[in-house]
Length: 147
Image (cartoon, rainbow, N blue to C red; front, top):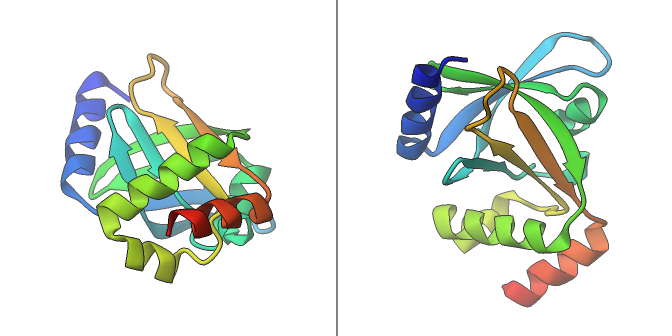
């Protein structure tokens, strides 16, 4: 991805509320694309799976960490790397509440036990994507305390 594409992707991410995420199916090997909400903060793009670690695209990425993000024509490829950090997951859930509203996050994100973070400004062609994961019981306690 050229620096012009990085700038174009970031500009579009600032404007839009939804992107298309493409992953490789863990059973079929086919590309699967789904619309997802996201939060952009600086050069970091956060994704929160709707059903946490039970979300199909999340499970696919655990098997094959290659993903593609499309913000209305501006695309980038990423490699995902799982991480575990309760404080980061809680912070991402709060960012989603701020952007989309606490009631919609509570309504649509029924299991908040995992999040993703992508670094947009990497020098190589495949920026790293970091996956934050924690046990559902810990995150549910944190979410209930914050609501």
